[in-house]
Amino acid sequence: MADSIKCPNCNANLVFDADSQMMVCEYCMSRFTAEQLKNTIVPEAPEDSNAGSRIHKADAEEHIKMKLGDQGVQFICNACGATVVTDANTSATFCAFCGSPAIISQRLDEEFSPDYILPFKYGREEAVKKFFNWCKGGRWTPFDFVSDKNIEKLTGLYVPFWLYDVESDVDVQGEGVSEVSHTTGSTTTVTTSYYNVRRRNFLSWKHIPLDGSTRIDDKLMEAIEPFNFKAIKDFDPAYMQGFFAERYDQTGDDLKGRLVGRLKEYITEELAPSFKKYNRGVKVKKDDSLIYEPKMFYALMPVWFLHYKYHGRSYDFCMNGQTGEVAGIPPVSRLKRIILFFVVLAIAAMLTRLIAGMIMGGFVG
Image 1 (cartoon, one colour):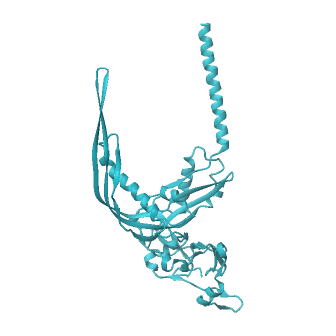
Image 2 (cartoon, helix red, strand yellow; image 1 turned 90 degrees about the vertical axis):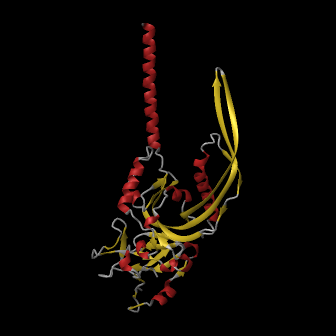
Image 3 (spheres, helix red, strand yellow; image 1 turned 180 degrees about the vertical axis):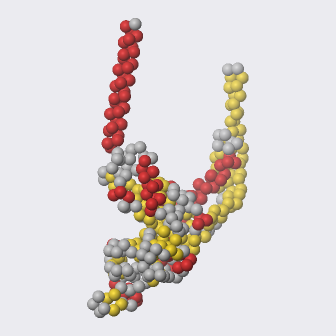
């Protein structure tokens, strides 16, 4: 059953408006905070057109929910009774017939129940503005790319992330090298000094984010960091209304290799300032650092996505729905490159004639 959150005043579906941070009814224009709507997901069964009665929720789930192999699963829209077809990892979507938001609450149960959710702060209108600004910043962006047709594909998606709280006892030993040069007359003397270096420190990190979906590019997700975790909230499905959402297909344990790699980068960054006095660098010879077992939390993070194709190649644009940070690689316009080629060619020809004229004029003079 595809569930939704209903307006207490008129029973229409509510959507979360990121700009106002309120739940909005588009029919009676009522507005509510998520806190006012605690525990109000309504799994309303559709009318059975044959029997003229309502199907019980349990019977509807047993009768309607059909596995479709790798293609996905069907659920019933509780607004119009149409079937909602999703893939195996979608937990929030829209009805293709009536446009109503639909939360697949069965996919948020047990181990897939998030601990936290970071609500969208920027709505679609702001995401569109950011997209246009991003396109204008690309000098090679095709003329026909910035269009309403492409903007229609812009999608607000809650991406599954694992958040790690980690502690580490850092113990690094190495050799620091410094060089000093002295010049006397025409002679330069270089003195190289070697030092035993050891750095010990206790470091801790809170909420290191790693996305848990294999379908989403890890580098893109890293590019739109950081997230402002001061705004994070205990999970509430109300914030999902009006957006798409996925559940993870990589567990927190699956990502520990990536976590260790990132922690090593963090440790290197932390130690770098203390190594600056060794102007030829520090060579690490021994690393006895201990990284303790992290605490893991499952969270849904807000991202605006646009996936598009240009001349047979795929491109992605994404925006952090909470900070507005954008990332992506825009397509390159062949026409603009051709125009630039001929412009450069024309300028080169003019400069050649000008220089030739000056040279010939000089000879004549």
